[in-house]
Image (cartoon, rainbow over all chains, first blue to last red; front, side, top):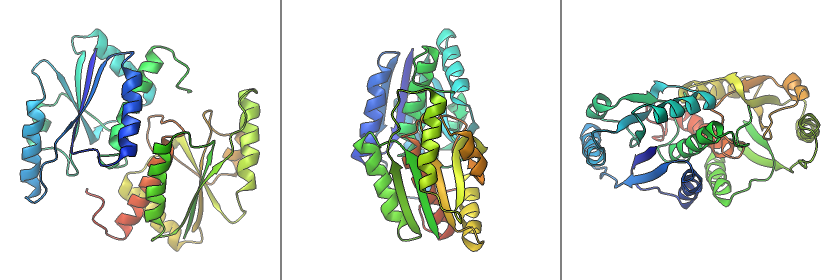
Length: 155
Length: 155
């Protein structure tokens, strides 16, 4: 199974980077995992134009056979166990090449919504696009720990 | 307004500590904020007994006039804007001394559920009791930034 996370904008803090790397390292046991940061689009332009530029960047890193999942506040919410079942199902279907997209501070361009297959919300709350990064990495690790019955998740 | 977070168990990573401190520092402009870690209860005992010991620790740090809020998966979920309204309301009511409790890996003892006033879930997903710490600190900061109309939160 392949799981890639694409995030717009440099990780601005060493602490965030450290947490992402911790889970990325643990995930290598369970899947082909990659966390890729795409360069920041410069901010001195209208928001819609910025989102369009970000969309172009995303598109360069998405392949046709990949399943595109947006981390989006308006997405579906899952419990960790439900999310692990969702991942497990993808693994046994012909949808085992997943790309999760984390947008910039203003969310996604409409073209990204159109090409995406699913939307997932980690929370009803808004987290910064920086904080979302370790969150999703931890949840994917938690999902694999549930699938593999490791003693990481307590119900 | 006074906001205290009590968390069981040492923060085991410098990265988590760094993130907590970042928001704690920013929050000092808006409220009397304190993040307090309570010593770990040793693990070589039955879970129920461990939770009882943790409850005793919590009780030592809770005053009678304080409003006790549990961070609990079964709690109410809020959007960030709803959460900011919740905080704002507490500030103008006679409930402006808040204590948020973050339990250990197995959750709270029943005595803690009994004395608590409210339960809040940051997400349907389970986050580690370590990761919850920067999450709640960021959400409280985000709430005050919404209340004070700072350009931190984008709808």
